Image 1 (tube, rainbow, N blue to C red):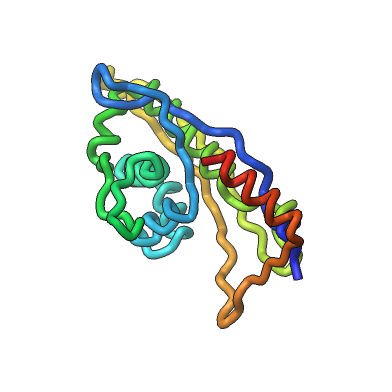
Image 2 (image 1 turned 60 degrees about the vertical axis):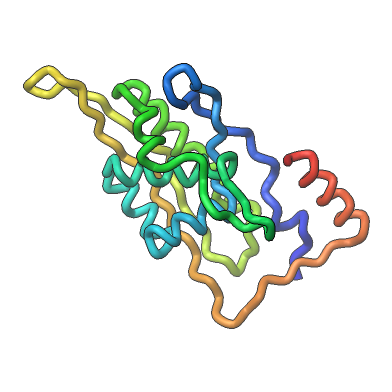
Length: 188
């Protein structure tokens, strides 16, 4: 049985991007927690399909995946603590990115956030297949008409299949539980 400190990834460095409506721009944290990945599953079917769509370089997919990574700070909850809406839409997020240079920076940071929020080899048990992720690359170029365009090579991730009829078990001592709860409270 795995110990909690054996499976927890170290606290990640926040990946931020400066975005917002004109005059209301601010640093926003791109974070792919379980809720963001669940939103991507709702949209794409599986996380793997979301990453494959991103790899194809479609701007619509970049916009949707970025939106999912920003929703943690924009969720409206009902009285039971469940989301009922978000203060931002994927369309609105797309409108915040106006020029190719900004798009390039956003895509690089999106790739970094995805890479940081995926489990890494060191923090997976030996029986789990290892996911893979690569940072995003963006190349800008001039078209024949003189407009700038961006070509995207986005992260690809191979998620391990979920074991059938098997629950992950994690045990921890009382001291580890207290430390874990303190770290979680500090990160909120």
